[in-house]
Length: 321
Image 1: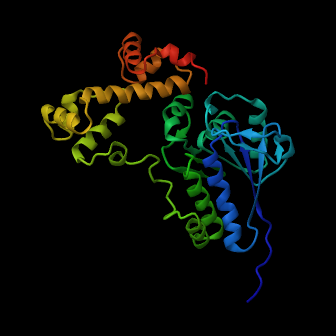
Image 2: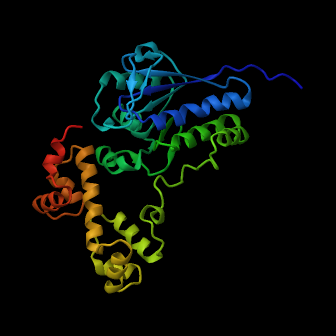
């Protein structure tokens, strides 16, 4: 058997932002390690980078020591921004400039979890499909309306890649391994992590409604699905019933039996949770948040918000992050 020709390992850099998701990070780097082991040669190398070269603390409180700061990286084949909590309020023009410089040099630049905020603010997602964690999706779309933002598990668009985070980082890296070294190797890596299948980009980010709500009634699930898709302009109960072939009375009974609340109350809570996300993750005015979540006025919104969360929208915004 002929010997395998030595190849130069492909280098990945992982830029960690304080409060980064440890799961998203390890799910991205571990497949590279396993690919080397399965291939019995060094296909990949990696380094960990921070803004200043100091240790970075994850959202779980675990510190990771980097190999270097951004000034120590002049060129690299691949760079992944790993973020987590509070990335939406981060501003660092020095980091944005560094990312743009790498992109100009031909670096394949990507992000996992809320790292997409860094790429968007650096102008590196213009003209590219991109995604982000489902919890940040609505706020991200509000902040960057010019971007082509999807709800995909991950997106690979030319020399940009973005990922919703969590265990989806594993699927992203498995897909990159498959593209570069074949499906067989990617499958071997997936087996090592007891990952029963490599999820496609089109797989859902969130658990199906059936699992999230713990119910299986098809018409009730359809109603909730319609509600979640129409938060800005809530549909009247009669229209929800009509779209699912139910009477208003049947609709009321289903919600009380399976969810323990009225359809109106469930719809309101969905809108309030969306509003809370927008208040925390965007700079939208309270009135704009109210209108984006189907409330007719800021005063009505504030009243409902205070009754549900025991604080006003303004107080929500004033809480330390």
